[in-house]
Image 1 (cartoon, one colour):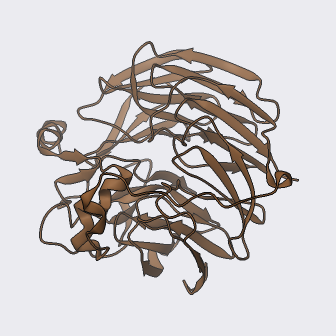
Image 2 (spheres, helix red, strand yellow):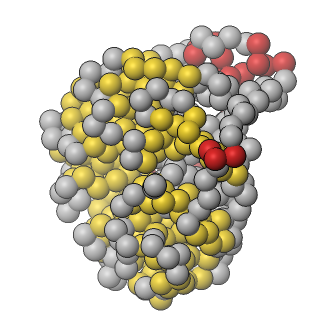
Amino acid sequence: MTLTSLNRMNETTRAIRIPHMARLCVLGVSLALGLSACGSSKLKPAPLESLSSSARIAPAWSVRVGNAAPTFALSTTDEAVTVASTDGNIVSLDIRSGRERWRAQARTELSAAVGSDGRYAAVVAASNELMVFDQGKLLWSERQPGRVLTAPVVAGERVFVEAVDRSVRAYDALDGRYLWVYQRPGTEPLALATRSVIEPFRDTLLVGQGNRLVGLDPLKGTPRFDVSVGTPRGTNEVERLADLIGPLARVDDEACVRAFQFSVACLELNRGSVRWSRPQAGTQAVAANLQMVVGADGTDRLSAWKSDNGDALWRIDRFANRGLSAPAFWGERIAVADADGYLHILAQADGRTLARAELDAPLAGAPKVVGGTLLLVTRRGTVYAFRGN
């Protein structure tokens, strides 16, 4: 496929963004969730449960970088966390102390950020310019033919970018040399304006292509496997939307993923096959460990399944309509935030609330855990680090 033909495809691809509480109205019929929510733009959130003062937790450190978009991502190594703001600040922080390691300024508004391997950092400007930095110094930039919302991936001295039309491009991190482009034929023309799946796994690049997970050879851009997470059903483009929502929840050689408005599935990555799938109409990524998979549905009912076979473990509904984020496993606990800026720490065994903290805004992107440290970034651009007891 040529770059010219991909440019034409970008002109016809449409991306839609569905606000959290409006999704039920737009998708209510296809998801069998009822239409009672459609009379108002926002349902009343469940009240916070009472907790003792000893159940409150405080961050080990916090640093404000600048406002972040909901699709922005934390990029981490064992020692550093890299974040970016919508106005172009890119900052690498030491995970233990919050100390600034290096800083860069893109000097333009960003649409996708940030991907980093600790040294190189990649962002995409609202003008579709891919920009790559080395320890804060701009190395090169390359204009992309279409809109990008998902943070680029930096791995193996290469930069990988997935646009909203689901095309994936690869560049040499050192000099910006164009390497290859991939786009699976026959995908739906309507795409979801949210973070997609593009992540490295051993010597394979995993990318979401609609409702399918494709494993690509990172050197050539050729597919190694192509697996359907489920068959979307519907009478129109919106009802058939089943894009995979990033980030993947990786556990050794397996990964679990959310197919928008459709299901949660766990896959064996070496075989490129689905291990199990369960219907759940949700809009946020899931979390997984060796014991369980956790995710919230469209009404913010939080469910847990066994990792090995998908059997139900528990389900809680006390966060109904609170706008839950993607969760994260933090030792024997689960961390999840809501749209009012509260961080909830839950027991893995049964979902009961152990602690709560108030953040300065809702989260941008999914929480991450590195070496026992829980890392979050809010839409006000504040990075929080919580340490386990």
